Length: 256
Image 1 (cartoon, rainbow, N blue to C red):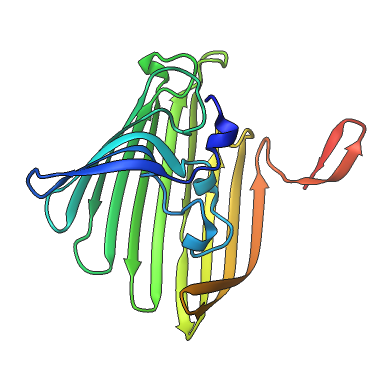
Image 2 (image 1 turned 180 degrees about the vertical axis):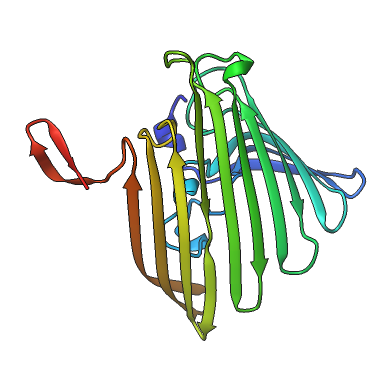
């Protein structure tokens, strides 16, 4: 989009209105936090410092409007209309659409299902629209947090010969344990499969595991977060691998 280099520095810029309809209808418009995904763009809000693969290849922010309504104390529904999957891109002039249902049956449990449907290619025929699903389950105890975020998406590729059906899917399972005092430990196993290279640019299957030791030090109205993190990622497949320094031969990039 125009001025994207400047707009990328805005985290949120929106207005909202709580309409006196039933239990309260919230209308929000502008740049708001994404309704897709478990992790935030900002590391301080996440249980790990680095983010999962599914987080980096789904939107952190959305530009458009959404309407949210609490049907009861446990069920909330949301409809949204946005400019595109990634808010700073502009491949066409048509909007994208989505719906979310959040369910909190008891204290500690949260279930959230979000569906996205929209055109993310220059060809905007319905047969090329992207269908994407994000499913989240979370349990929060006094000292333990366990969450599962599973995503799957598909779309026919208009620019490829024969318009193949691209598919990508992935999941992350962060488990955070507050060991005592200011200390906590988080382990996050994950995988990401980009069958056609549509999202990552390479046909690959990725496995990763991230372990984080955290110490939070409050001081007055401030809080310092110290993290020591170890991460292992393995990429396999037709386009799999990570860059090594230099080339294995002239013009051939070294991969491992």
